[in-house]
Amino acid sequence: MSSYYIGLGKQTLKEAMAYRTNFILSFLVILIPLAGELLLAKFVYTKGYQIGTWQLNHLLLYYISATVASEFFAIGTWWDIGNDIKYGGLNYHLIRPYSYFWHNFVVYYSLKLVFIVFALIIAYFAMVIFSGNFIPDIQLLSLLQFFILALIVAPLAFLITFCLSILTFFFMDIDFISKILGVLLPFISGNILPLDIFPATIREILIKLPSAYLVYYPSCILSGNYSWKEFSWVLIEALIWLLIFWILTSILWFRGRKIYEATG
Amino acid sequence: MKDYLQYYLKSNLLGIKRIAYFSKSFILEICADIINIIFALLFYQILYLNVGKGLGIPISDLFILVLSVKLTGDLYNLFFGAGVQSLPYHIQYGTLDGLLIKPFNIFFLMYLSKLNWKCLANLIIDIFLFMILITKYTIDISLVSILSYLAMICFATLIFTAFNILIYLGSIIFVRLDAFVSLISSFFSLSTFPAAIFRNRILRWVFTYLIPVIVIGNFPLMAIRGEQKGSLFLIVIIITLLFSYLAYWGTISMLKHYKSVSS
Image (cartoon, rainbow over all chains, first blue to last red; front, side, top):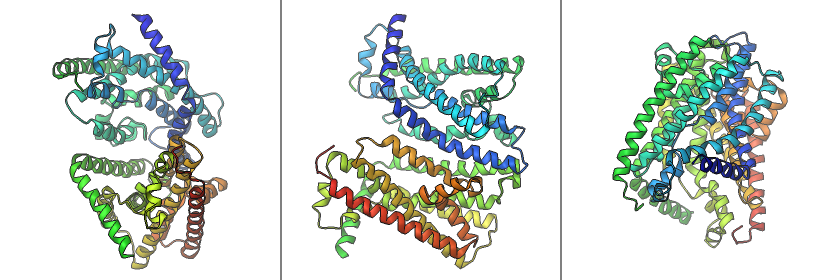
């Protein structure tokens, strides 16, 4: 079975590479608002002020990491899954000897993999332009911690996406979910501002939400120094969210399959 | 004139029926817009709590800046957005013929005949937010400053419309220009930032005259604050005329090259 997923991943990669210009352009679209945030941060620091406890170079790195993380660990509704359920295309997958979840997981992250390669190249140039450093100020330990956390966060992001997408079993139209998420997520995930500079009450809530584990914590880890003790707490909390969404998705999938009429 | 008004009313009143049918989606879209503007204001509020005067201008001015950008965007979407955005579709699928054969001015039909009702609701929300802002922060305003501000918003809307027309006209050359349109449009997300952050002279020039980002948010703010009255209006009138002429010339050229077949 693993050869099926490998083959599927390779095929998706090939398809995605055909649209590389689109990938580059779509990432540039995200970089422009980021440029505004970076210019604003630089403006504040040159006037002698400081945002929270952040040093300017760490804040610049945070913003760039957050932009990349928010794309790679993006959550929302995925049209492929929604359409499969809505128009009866799910039948085709259900009779095949593979897991529908892992099939979509492979396709989803193969597409993201191509995106991330271009995103990293562009993010590197953005970092050089704004910080003036050719080598990013990232500790080896931070990099290791980031990759370990990514192993939890990547399935978590997809689980949330899968969970939201299979709501099509229960609602005719789930467009509103992506609309609301599109507005809420950049703010509550720490993409626009680091969550630790929010007023205490709001901060305490936001840093415990799953969205914080997708953008805020990975970006903080990359741009700062987390001790192993602090890191292990983040990891445990991310694992708890993973477990919660695994259970929730299983329940929704089970119930959704029961009411699915396979007629579209 | 009477015929134009009749056509405008008839075609747009049909749009209300559509909204009534998709009322849930309409309400949700407005909710998303409200959340969006609240978060944009919250962004500066949180920054202000952290750095205070480090942002260079008072918090009330930052809020005016954000609301001005939203007001310009809503005015554009209300009157011109739907028409301008359908331009690539007409060119791509050859449906412009349907408009060309009608006994009305083609500019009116292409850019001004579709009203976006959702944005009318947004405009009411904008006015409501402005009133809250003015009363909460006791902003010093006079009749002249309000009139200057409204005039500046009108100019900004015209510039934004002309700029968008120019982008969408690119579809006569390129079959797909979605990513390009998104890229150019994303520059306007910079309009909610104070002009002071563009410290480089070339950057400031580019964002005033080439991609008029600073004109959209910062010029109305300067108008309501009564800064650089004469020169500000002179600059904005020149930019408006320039972009309007380019949009006019671009549309005429497009119509000459339009072959009535889908590309």
